[in-house]
Image (tube, rainbow, N blue to C red):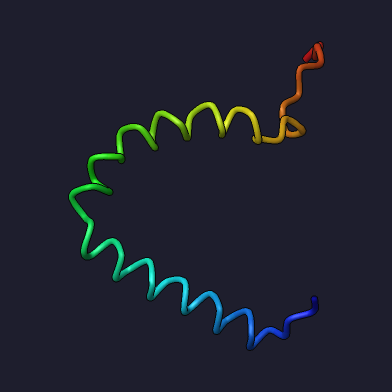
Length: 61
């Protein structure tokens, strides 16, 4: 399925509007989940973080 850029922008805009209205009505529930989402984000960041930028080689400077 090949969507054009306009189609992707329209879909993203629709998702943002729907998320806004859902969060507006259920803000207390969403805020109650925030600490758990933060705790879940930590292991996910470690799991999906690329380790290519770390240089563990010994340097003799």
